[in-house]
Amino acid sequence: MISIKIPKTREDFKAYYELRYRVLRAPWGQPKDTEKDDYEPISQHFMAIDESNGKVVGVIKMFEKTEGVGWVSHLAIDPGYQKKGVGKLLMDTVEQAAREKGYHVIGCMSRLNTTAYFERMGFRTAGLPTNYFGTTQVLWMEKEL
Image (cartoon, rainbow, N blue to C red; front, side):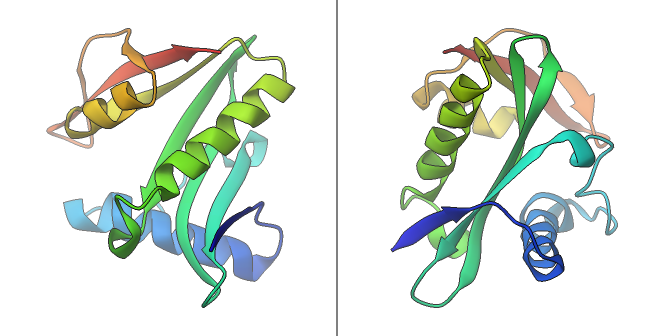
């Protein structure tokens, strides 16, 4: 069973950031600490835990981009758990948290190879592609709540 937890301890955050780095930055040869940004202190963080082994298998964060608009970022799922509903569980959790905060829209900067995933989650393209980390392109996608 997969459960969602808010990281609180040093050990929680160590595992949280390790997964983010391993999935989102290491494959592109990015250095350690590029998995973090300036918005970490003002973000809500969520992590998916495999209760059978205690392993962190997914992570995501959200913060208020502008009034009423939540910015979802750093969605990372352990490769062994992808396509098993972990991302959907995290997205559902973030959407609920956004509604509780009174946000009317959530959005994300999606890599071009992940736009279909976000479209399945109900997001639509709302921006033009832009370069991120050199040649990796991202675009703004959003979803009305």
